[in-house]
Length: 180
Image (cartoon, rainbow, N blue to C red; front, side, top):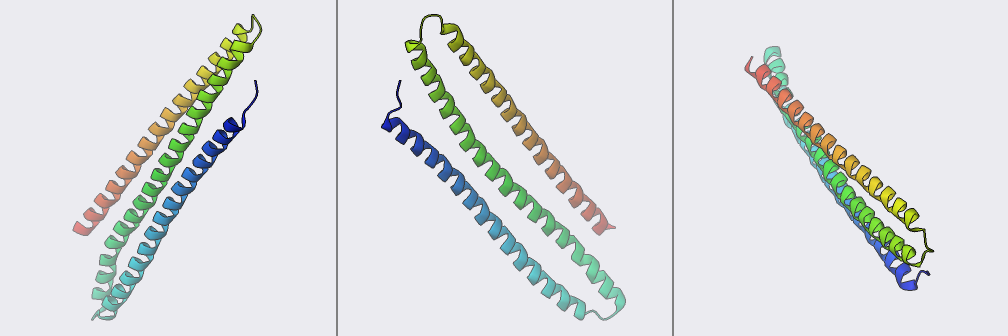
């Protein structure tokens, strides 16, 4: 059994496609992160100018302290929004990388099973047991991979729920402090 130039070309093309998919996902994530960071810096700069002007207009110390306290709530909310945005970009990028990896694993498994089938047809008598054992190991490996993928997805869902709960808690504390 020989590897043909067409098979090598197809394998190389699949590898390049996978690499390009990962590169595109990384570039999209970097672009989103750059936009988020630029918006955050611009917003922080504009807020600091507005806050400084408001503080300079304070007529007494009590008004000055009161103004400083009012600046805290929007800053906390913007920090939470910034964190959520970063987390969302990271989650989206991770999902895209997982899709690429899952496709490559599926293609590899398909190719490997095809190779095993070809080998088993040309193998000497009695090698069916060895081929069946390899297929069984491959099936067990795939099952383990599927279980790990499910666990990773569950962990991601739990982390997202925790981030949402923490965000809501901080918002609730900020509102309670503001009301007091």
